[in-house]
Length: 62
Ligand code: SF4
Image 1 (cartoon, rainbow, N blue to C red):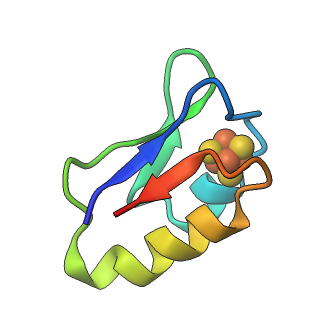
Image 2 (cartoon, protein in one colour):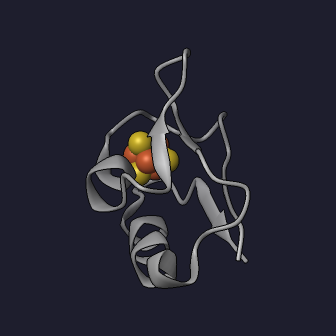
């Protein structure tokens, strides 16, 4: 599974970084981004939960 954050939609609320810091972190533009190429199996539920918690639906997981 991969996770991607649409930089144009991210409003830097921090929900994903709080929910799943193993997968999402801040970049130099103070937006969230996925910090792993492939989400580890044991992090998939959390990565999906973070995507669901995003208020602007900026995160795509597939
Ligand atoms: Fe950005 Fe969505 Fe993460 Fe909030 S939850 S920091 S809007 S990607």
